[in-house]
Amino acid sequence: MIETSHLSKIYGRGIYALRDVTVSIQKGEFVFLTGPSGAGKSTLLRVLLRQEVPTEGSVTVAGRDLARLSRRQVQTYRRGLGFVFQDFKLIQTKSVLDNVGLVPRVLGETSVQQQRRTFQVLKWVGLQHRMNAFPEELSGGEQQRIAIARSLVNEPSLILADEPTGNLDPDLSLEIMNLFRDINARGTTVLVATHDRELIRHVGRRTLTLDHGRIAEAG
Image (cartoon, rainbow, N blue to C red):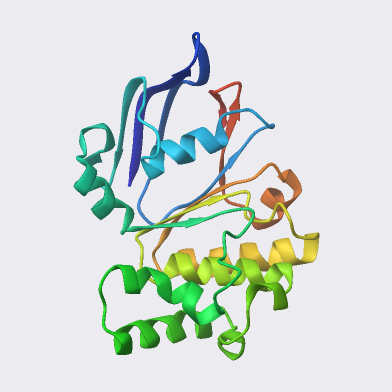
């Protein structure tokens, strides 16, 4: 699913955010990406989202060489991805239903299709009863569940999550990770960046550790 070969990303005056990263993540895997702040986790996710292009090396996702994608192909590629942020990125002036339904609306689906698909994913994350609420009326855990529902609404083959439990307490963090495990069990490839080693140990999945932009451990 994901293959990087001698991948490096250099900023400014020769500053390496990633250096000689070679990893392989198979379709259907659940993998943690960890390391201290500044290790390169977010940079690697941005490369996989095609917000950044490698300075050296290559990265392919589902057989696509990301560096060779045209602007239109990038948009098509991203439609097959789900991305979950630490700070949720919900639109405060829109209801839960509208936040989650934004993706199928942008993709041009009919109102009936939008509502059906949105209700299905909200039901799956257990928050269909909150579809008319606004983000400020939800707890942190509920907001992250809504963000995850939004990432699932286009039925992606790959979910990328950047510190998705960074703003949550330990119990809610485990709840969110259990939801990612359920998503993975349905066949979706999941890559989660987190610095929470205790949570990683509890969930028990393959872990890639970055240190100063390099792969320090792949176990």
